[in-house]
Every structure is written in C-alpha cells, then in structure tokens.
Length: 328
Image (cartoon, rainbow, N blue to C red; front, top):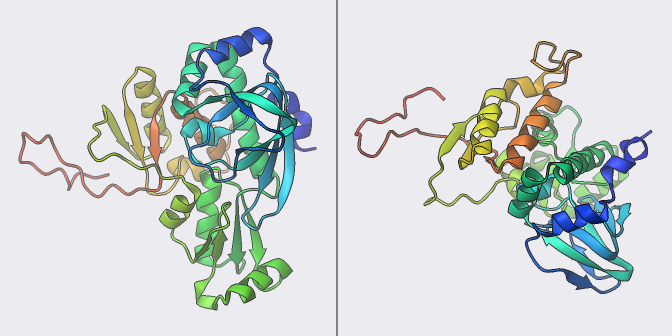
C-alpha cells in the first residue's frame, strides 16, 4: 500500500474552523476567488504560495518533465495546498486548478507560512507533517519531477540520480536504448551519444549532460543570493553538524545561510543505516535524518543554498589577514 493509502488523513488534513481562523491571521494576502477550471498554481511556479481553501475546491495533479500527468487529490474547504518546496520558497512540483464550482482561497508565502508554524504549535504540527508526507509521496510515486534518460550505470547519470535523490527531488529513469519513449525522445532531438544523459525538468526544459549546478538551476533549487546582504551566521557544509547549527541559530532569531556544494546530510546522508545517533534507538537512514534536519532548519527560516561551493573565507575587513587557506 502507498503512503497516500496508509496516511492520507495526515497528508491531506482538514483544519477545524477555529484552526482556519488562526491560520488566516498569518496569510500573506487577501482571499482570492478563482473561476471554475482557473489555474491556481502550475508546475514550476517559483515561488508558489500555499493556498488555504475557504470555499470550493482545488484539483491537484502531479506531472513529470515529459508531460505525463496524474491526479493527486482535491482540496476542499479547510484544506491547504503545497509541500516542502513551498516552505523553502522553491518551485512548485505540482499544479492545481479550481474545481467545478470554483474556489476562494487565501495565500501563504514562505515567510508567512513559517510564522504560522512557529506561532501556532497546533496548526504548525499539522501543516509540517502534511508538507513532508506529500514530498515523500511524490518521491515514492511516479509521474512527478524530472525524467533522466541515458545508459544504466553510466557514471554521470549515477551521480545525477544521487544528487536529486539525496536532495529529496523526485525523478524517474528511462533507458535511452531499450525504453521506447526514451529512445524516441533521443531520436527526435537528434541527441548524440556523448550528449547523454538527458534531464527533462518538470517545466519541460531539456538539459544535455547537465552538471549538478545546471540541474539545480533548472529545478529552482538554488536561491538568488543578495551580494549586499549580511547574515548573522554563515555555515559551510550541510551535514548533521551544519544543519544542527542552522536549527539552533535560526530558532534564536538569527539570519542563517547554509552552503553545500552537493547535498544535504554530508557523508551521513549517504549511510543506509545509522544506529548510534541520539534519539533514534531503532536506527534511521542517513537520508531520513538529513531530511528531518533540513525541514526543521527551513521551519525556523534558515536559508539553504545548494549546490554552491565556497571558494574562500575572509576575515573581518579590519584585518588584512586572508582566511582563504583555512580548511573547509
């Protein structure tokens, strides 16, 4: 049985009237009315707010880069759209249209959503659990996220799959030689063997032999950093120690930036099972541990920039000493 079957009530909860009123106080805008069939949010929208339905319905679908589409759910009054991407202010992995009777919904951008989750423990717990489970559901299912086309076992393809999987982005694979759809796309675009693997982003954009940075940009993973902004804390490395630091600092109200050149979790994120981590007596996979820490850091407003490499560290401008030789 799928996650949607066993935990559907937690993936798509219905807020009580009092919880809806609590949530509305944190909305980032006024209620908006959508006509029947009108698009509320599209795959690839960046940023895409969470929408809390007040009247009517929103029909949600998932779609992969090749345009294959499947229904996910239909949100009614008291339900809300979104998954972890909306908490981070990233591109939407799903699309939604107003139902047959239209809908009235109120938006929550990433900052207002985080304020709601921190200020109301009751509603925040429900929302956070739902966002996490929905992302897991997208990863476990098909017809969502990017489509990779190439040769099984090829080094560049394996690295790209690992990059997407470790960062929690759904992806599917098509064999360029043996899969009819994969082979047809390669032939239609006139792709040469040395241009594989291909990555078809959810928006439909086709990348040839992409780097991790190019893949991240296509998915809207990498934030646009303001060069004039000063953070209270900058953390190099998104392993367990870096993510823990981000949670502690951000929860105290500090502005936090976390940078990593590959993926969340560091070396621990690639571990199949961790048995000696405090608080998990039955053990936990490295990817699951990293995912929990990542979501917790996002909840408190930490900004995570992946995959970005830190080239140099400089001491305070008052000092002439260059810290670029310091180990990272």
